Amino acid sequence: MQTELSKPVVLNWDSVIHKEARTKDGKPVGYIAAEEEEDIYVLSSRFREYRIPKSRVMEFDGSMVLLDLHLGKVGRYKIR
Image 1 (cartoon, rainbow, N blue to C red):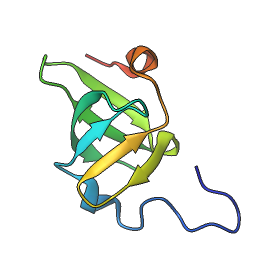
Image 2 (spheres, rainbow, N blue to C red):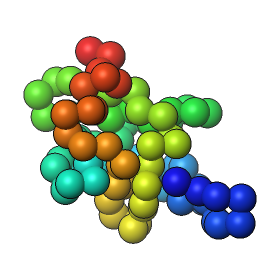
Image 3 (tube, one colour):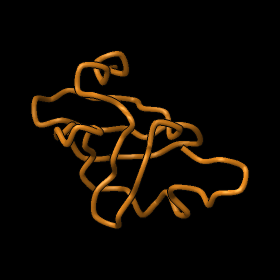
């Protein structure tokens, strides 16, 4: 998460499209299919789709997005 004095976690949200999303405990969630003003859309390999707030993104290393969620909590963002 970002504080007033820190840099944003992601400077260019288009750069996260098609990148892998993982939980903070390293579990794979899926791949980012799209982004909107406040959310990212993640598709999992089991045909599930999640709408996760950008505020839940903890880190982006250029190839993977790390969420500040444990796998058990990702389900609350499931939309399909």
